[in-house]
Length: 321
Image (tube, rainbow, N blue to C red):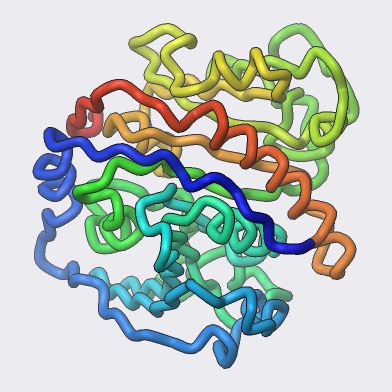
């Protein structure tokens, strides 16, 4: 896919939110350290995602930094990729290193819309579970997308540090696993042919699907969805940008959040942060599979940026306990 020229992201700065968010992100109990930052050459990084993208043209106008966080017995390794010409765009977040199409889609998105990307590094290998979970924990492995909590300010702060002083839309990128469990659907039966654990077929007290009225690409696949969270104490229509995406013909999965499961979506809605998760079916690590899933993600990202870039004054608050 050729890199595309897109209108510069229409960003916003909120004078009210900077100090509040900085306080949330810099609170650090004993055992947590500020992320150590090391500039790296993306053309030499020993990581499969970077190895698939060795073309110098891809990295023109991008600065890459390796982040290291030690939080008690847990060690975190991340990459920060920043647009030099359009620094105030979205915050792109890739938490699962084995979801290879998300890295590819992130590169297209940051070249198009700017901003900053944070990628959790599961290691140079993509062929075992360590690429999805963090095994450098001194104990049980940790799912990077189940660790967002104010009690983990080192990790949470490293991922979200670029929100301080600049109100960005958080766009999380995921691919979902096959073998959708129909038992997870508890709202009147199973629809469609989706095969992912996150799917427009997923329906429960927590998950409220609104399927695209017309099954056209990229929503001809039930596993291509935009996920938007909202607080259980508020109506579903309060989900940031959910109504607009549903009206635009998206598969939209509304997540009702009563208590946090540690995911970024839950942390974001409980802290008043603007968040959309863009997700599609995992199609493997072949060049063809990565390209096909990447293209679906990019098509959804384009619509999210078009419809979700305006927002009211943000009211940050501590997470509901």
